[in-house]
Picture 1 (cartoon, rainbow, N blue to C red):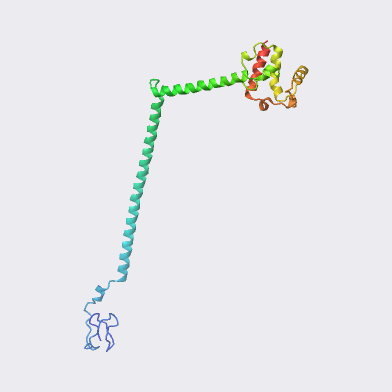
Picture 2 (cartoon, rainbow, N blue to C red):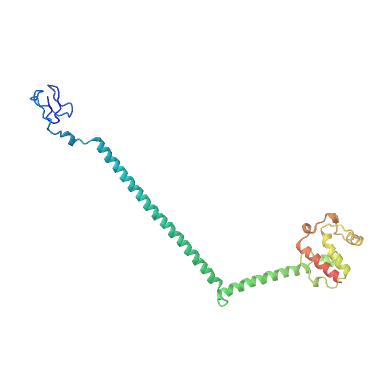
Length: 236
């Protein structure tokens, strides 16, 4: 039997075509002639699987290209925003620099500027005054001088001036210079210095002269006072 739809030859008595599945007409038999010129409509109704695969591949390629193009556009836009941010920061830095230049170029005619300078100057003056007040208090309230324990009891605390050594002899200047060492327990090689400081109740000689290091055992004030007393002593 010949299928009317696809012209496939089936066995006699078949109810359906084994190729396309269409119902068979029982009036057809193998004796009927086959029309080989009749077109096979099944070829048009069911497209080739290879054609379908190529169409899907083309769609995938096109979709990929679209995604890549979108990513490139977004990247350019992001880079453009970064450049704008850098430019904005540069402008802000330039503006800040100009503002600082304007502030530094203010003249003494600016009341606020003058007020700040006056405040600073007053603080510096107060600091100087307070320091002098401390030195004056130290000098006036030193009881060691009054009891005869020291020639200059505050020579380790404040910088000495000419008024502090007024009326002292050359020998007294020598004792005043060495009593700075004596406060730290330094021993002396000169016999007159040993006799002088051994007579003082506050003196305890425990460090040999060779082991005494001025830079590590004396303060800056003490070192400057020693130099000052030595210079006055040598000038007499």
